[in-house]
Image (tube, rainbow, N blue to C red; front, side, top):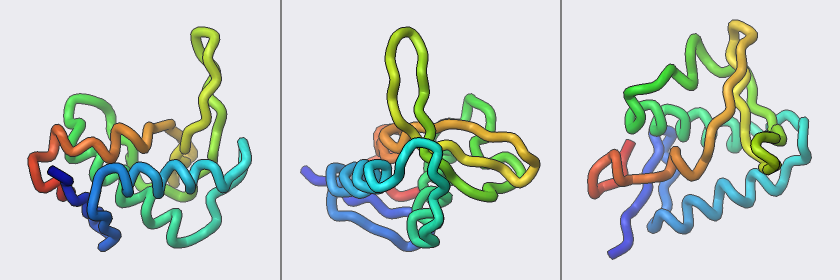
Length: 114
């Protein structure tokens, strides 16, 4: 059974796969080091982080004091290199996150609503 995904900014998808494809395409549209300048993309990423924080309560805050902007950044670790989004906070700190973890409805219940 398909689980609808809804973000706090009003963006919705009929399935988790459709939401994942949206963020995968967004990641592909940006080069490594590029700032996410499209306002709609920025708003979707903020809402995704809000959803992430509701689902993952045992870690540090991803939004912190607020998000100033996002970049696509290449993460290099343990011999692997993967692109991801990084949120740059208004206090000058930054954090990476996985759009896949943000979309996972398993922690949010059957509705998948954040």
